[in-house]
Length: 148
Image (cartoon, rainbow, N blue to C red; front, side, top):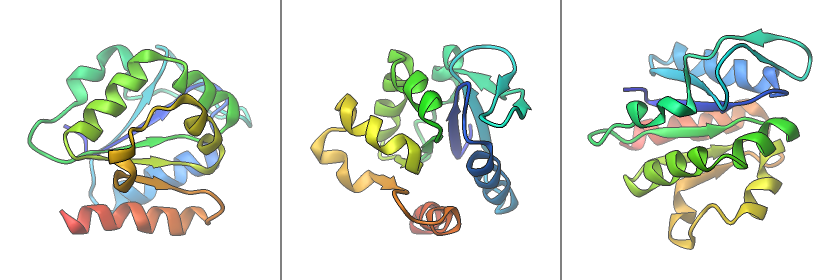
């Protein structure tokens, strides 16, 4: 089971996603890219990636024994596609219900607020990038694994 699930869709911000993916893997965490739709996914700048899994396989990614982190990728269109899919909501809410965390990249934050996805009791389980540099955001996410 992965430690970190990065949710992506078309028009994701590859600079943030690839940086997060690389840094977290360098720290020996199991990281998977999960796409809303099957197939190759194209970023804002035309970079294509083949995700490790798809939302249709979301239940297979969940662990009942370890705390996981889901990262909502940035890119307004990416975030809108991801957050409009009920499977993403179920995956996120299941991880949170099992004591996991969610990292929200800057360009996804305003959409998360609009969806009402997070319950008030989960506030301490959400790490928002907002205006912070990606490196600072990553350090906050990495601290979650140290706290385990």
